[in-house]
Length: 309
Figure 1 (cartoon, helix red, strand yellow):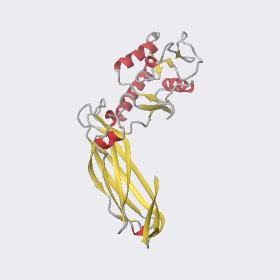
Figure 2: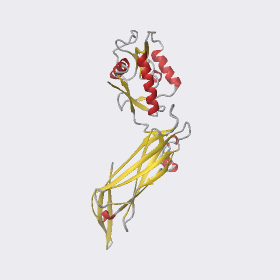
Figure 3: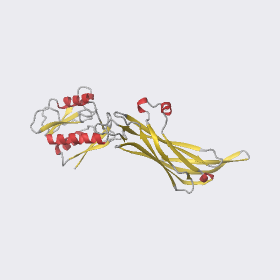
Figure 4: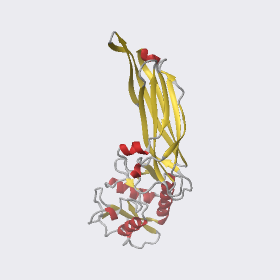
């Protein structure tokens, strides 16, 4: 939400004085869907107090997307340039008066990231103009650049859009996989990342990284009938052992069937391993795949891990 002041002036005998003022609230937000390459940007404007000539002002608005040249002048790197186009824009002209009445605009933008393998950000903008008789027009712009659209997510045949910086939550059920939940909980309690917005995990789609993470964490795990080695943070993250400087630290916990791995250690720079039932491991693999696909998780995207009953 933004707060603005619109002020009008008058000149009498070469003396300029204020002839009116209005305090404005501006609310603008964008929304999208993981299944379609279209983003909406809505804006709501209202004056909550004011007086004089300012109350005669008329608010008009038009949506667009910043040009490549504009973004380059702002110092935006090539890989972060916006790539989407306006599909539609509507904002019926709104008089400032009466107070506490809202003017609403809605616009839609189509991402150009529709060819297989494409990934692109989308910047959206509302350009506001307040006109008022002989007063000089007042202009303001409200820009959002929250969404990334892609047609590069494994298992998703169509393009869609997400907010890439927001760490979505992957949850495991204690009822479905009790040993997995116990291990994740203990690992996070020992200081390993993934439980909070401030310290999320980061997705890896690099199979070389993922394989090496598994080998470093569980390559020497014992062979136990009905059990499999579980590592946290996952091998499919950038938080695994391959990205840690030696000595690469592993930790474990009681009842994890790993007597040669230290237990009781804490801190964020390590990987926890535990032997858990194969059924729990299979459950985890399915949940992770579904989550990565549903949230359109690309390489480096943040996410959190939690548990439910």
